[in-house]
Image 1 (cartoon, rainbow over the protein chains, first blue to last red):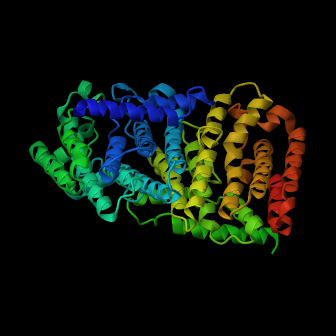
Image 2 (cartoon, rainbow over the protein chains, first blue to last red; image 1 turned 180 degrees about the vertical axis):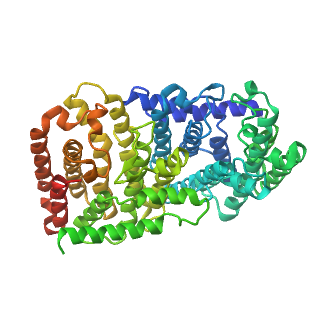
Image 3 (tube, rainbow over the protein chains, first blue to last red; image 1 turned 90 degrees about the vertical axis):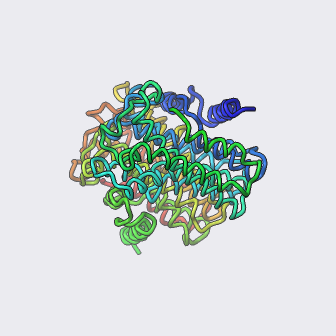
Length: 293
Length: 293
């Protein structure tokens, strides 16, 4: 199976599992279930759940059962997008080519849909069919990566506070390590934990997650400069308009491109210990650097 | 120790534990820690954590260690107030006599502070010093009670959608069972789970939680009609202004008062199995019905 076919299959698996985990559209109050589902099934690439499952595969050779744990990451990612798009935050009308949640359901429901997905992520992990000791580690990992100290919420705040400040390398790194890096690294770590990784395997997958996370963000910033809105499915050039601190703003496009390549290579180097079982993780690192949207 | 002294002591214990659990004001990004702390330490009565600890005491005779679990309930309660007060939701400027979170920190930080407290609640439970089996049960209980099916978020949506609709008893019950009832019941259940309750004890404390939860809401609705704003520390009469479905609107004040008393009596009747160890729970049920703010 080539990478494209493999990704399509994984996305289908994730979509089916999310559909199973999220209350049906008819469950009262229907509005909130519809709002959560609208953003969950708005065409996300499912990068985090796929990385989680591949980390589990690298450790144990199989991914059975890791799917539900993987979906908790997509719930957290989606909640963060819904809240991030709110008028009080980034004020985005479009995301992945579709109207943002609050444009369809109103701000009140959008806030609650985000809250609901975050809550459901932890509920999903608490109810996994797995040993309790692993479930509590998964929950602690997800909460830390999403949280207010070095996690995603911290990153959002650093990002908000960074707007309009001089583009400075140290601040840039602080923002991105927290804002996108922590959850991407957690995707790998949660796959590792689920599959019962030893310390060396956990550390190797953490390193892979850190490097791909940074590569992902560098490319994201570059695409905001280079790609047209239609290709991105969201408004391009917003970073510059909002005076965000980005990799192209700090280093220029050429150096940013080299940095992304370097991170990708370092990510792949950390996979040595897993041999062939990490084949897809190698491909995914390349994909993250070469993507066009 | 009389009830007033006992409550003051419990509140101090909860405050000290919350202070330990929430990142220091100086932890970067400081803004989010300050915003979370602002609302957490805005004079809340700590009813949920105190009920949680008393449930643990009723089961095991002691409350050691239950304090951190109890504090997760206050984090969830506080997050819900912050989001509920947002302009897109109830648009409140004052809460407990102080400016609401978004009036002090702005809407973006208020959204994130709520997200942060919700995340921290689950992290706190995942990192408890307790058997993993109990921790996962506590997390599932809190997530369900806060969630989109019969939980607090569902209640918020029912409430929003009920505005302006004819005051009808069935809808009123649906709203309040979810909006405030689920988390109050969870407070008792989590204390029970933490202390290793058997099924009978768990069921008895659940019943106590359901009845006090309903009593609490009836009184809340009555106070909004009867008490002046200064006494409440928030704008009185808002329910009527927003055409909310409330107990006084459906049943009138006199019947509402009788219903609250009846719920209190039923709550107390469910404590029989615990004997003297439930003495404070008896007093708390009375306090909930007799409170003036």
